[in-house]
Length: 355
Image 1 (tube, helix red, strand yellow):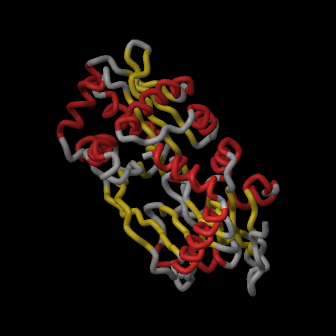
Image 2: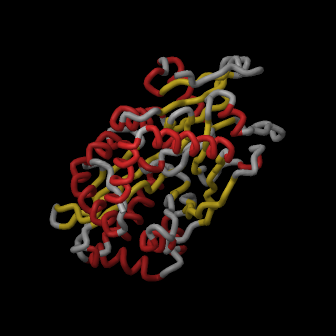
Image 3: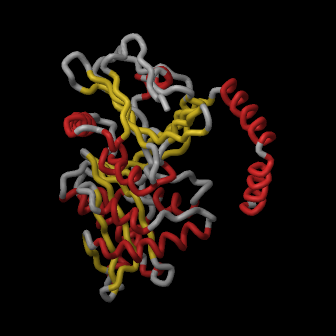
């Protein structure tokens, strides 16, 4: 099925599945991602390749070469096909929190029209959605489809450790960290086998809010990436809390954390955050991004992250739905089920079972 169509001025634009990228294209894309000041580890080809291979999804990269054969625009996305139409989706289902296009921002007059870039190369787009990183340059985008989604706290790691320690806005944070030390909680770095306990703890948390859990092997696959680090809070040689960090450029991203309910009064999560901050400073990172969830989804997790302070940055979503295409799509879907009553009945039963 045809995905791309050439348009005027698009001779250097390329649309490819992740698995079909050449070695040179991957190299050029990685160089561009590493150089873009608002890129994230969630843009990386290696991570997206894991999603494509493990979950058998349609993962693409749309990218543009300038006249010097250097990439100056790149956009990874998940494509969902439904009949004649397609939805351009984020990777949030696979817990990649940030996404969106990457482009050069050196020219103050440069304007990127996201919709045009996508529509000119993917036929039948019905909707576009993506969650943008905290430093995304919205002013460079010619679009009115940005909606504020939530906020994320960024802790500046450049001050010395004592200044960061004293800057925690709540005294109980320091008390909790000291309590963990007194309870002989220690830290172990990059023991991937601890992901099994992480997965157990994480499943318990998600079950409490009726959310799905991704398979353990997905986290195991991701943990093989150079940008991923596992940090565990240990008690009597047993992991009672496990955090997964993603690093990129000058920032450490607090991708995931889960802990044992039984040992939570030992305050291992507070200690983990403090030890991550110390580790990040030792490795010369400048910022610590908590990757905050929407407060309505996991309020306890959000309150935990906010108590460490940091500068609050807005997180925007880019959302666009094409009304006429949606109406046409619904009509076609209605006619399809009229001509296939058995499938219509099966769909009704499936919906009733889920509810």
